[in-house]
Length: 312
Image (cartoon, rainbow, N blue to C red):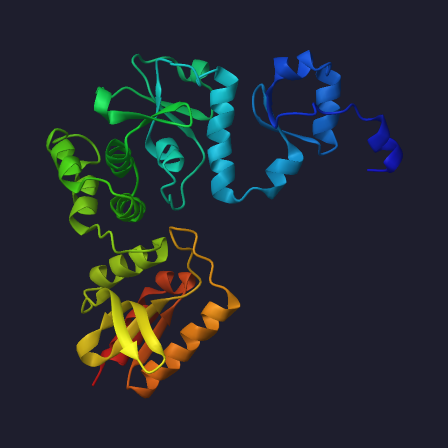
């Protein structure tokens, strides 16, 4: 866009970043002006009747954008006031900052009735399973299912590996496993109950990333000897915490390229220190198996590498 074109564009409001169409009209921007601002990359239309400042949208990460879409729904429908529905399933998971793996951006709501899909919108899914008062919390002025109810609902809807990733993270954030097991008892016979029970049975709060969860699931599914997670080992270069270890065989399995649930981003100095400790462990007779995302989908190769490392 040329400087002349930029100069001719109407100005966005000086304050705020998220607007309904009528709010932009209130700032003097008619439908033609809104269309021009969107066309020239100044506004992004998040959903019908709701826009965000493009400069902000471009800076946001994938998880933040997913949460922004939920807030756009709330802003567009004025649900920041006490309403008749509750954000649920993967929408609630995102608002709880749970890690959702390979999941779409549909908006999920618990509803007291059963309105038509046309009324809700193409990007919204309504659910009518009843909820109780303790199963609803308020996050950022939005009514959201509790951490436990969210994890249970997601596990009933998602595939097993997606459910396990989310359940691991929910337990890590403090979800009450006994409460979720009681919830499961009341859902016997419903669709998804088997996935929920499997996820609860195999969930482990020690997992620090989705990659670690999926690595553990693959080891179990391939019937490989199971290592211990999060093993601390002393070396001449300091203590080193391994993602997984078969201690008696001195074999470590590390998941590389991971995003930690707590947004851990290692600095160059931290990476250097980890490499030093790994060198010290290698000198002590440890063998390392390093796994990346792609390796989790090359199962035969993964199994062969692990068995080779464990072989005497």
